[in-house]
Length: 361
View 1 (cartoon, rainbow, N blue to C red):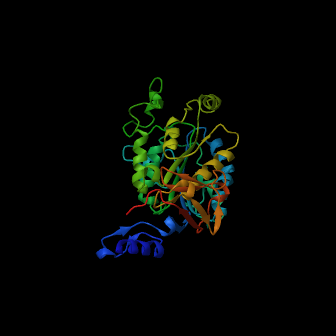
View 2: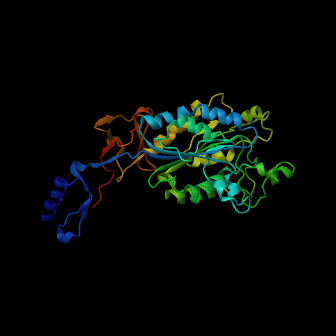
């Protein structure tokens, strides 16, 4: 009888799992009041975005399209008061590596090109004229290397001591790539050697010399300390998505290649894709920011719920279960994902109440 009295006191007095002290403190219970689990926390809203801009021949018009539609990307970040950081690198930042130019300064974030520089390498919510600064920083021209090693450039840039103040603990890392070529990252191939080979075999997605996409996913896993369904990063891309776009764009860029590796890494990291052949990049950039915001405000549960019993609140208001303007449950990550207008702003109080799927003693 003593056992049941002790258990009852746990149910009445506690909303959290703890050692009760009953029976010499050896028994731990995770039953919660009324048979429900409860968790509340504030949204930190920390999102760090790295833009990887192809600066090879013919890319200037594509860069113009991206910068002209930047507001479609950043407006929601600003209205939600997210604590964001933005930085720009190029698809030839890998040249900083020792087997190439061996110039560490090439790995530094870009603040413009030629005679036009903003002097700001990491853009913040407090940056004066944020849109104008992004325009300068992301307009990298078309004088860079035509050997696009976007993935190697991401690793080179984020590993550089020159950029250590960018990625923060507990922030969500979003990588956004703009390129009309696929990724050719191969640390053992001389610069531009593919141009000397008949048939351009290095443009082959299955070329064994290319470091596999899994290498860069492993790198980002280690960098963020997260992996799988719980990963705290994504890679998105504006790229050539099919042969129709390839044929349309080949007039301006004869070596245009479908971005198969970009599509691969985006699919494996919950990223979004947009076409460089779109007349306007506004829709694609809006879709990319939407996915970043959803992933960046994902709310991880400490217990597995009976899904039908989940109730979600933000700042005291009940949020409906709705994939457009509400919340959905991500079983793989055991998390609540917010959508549309229901995405909570920075500092919002989020509460989730549910019946646990399995009571543990």
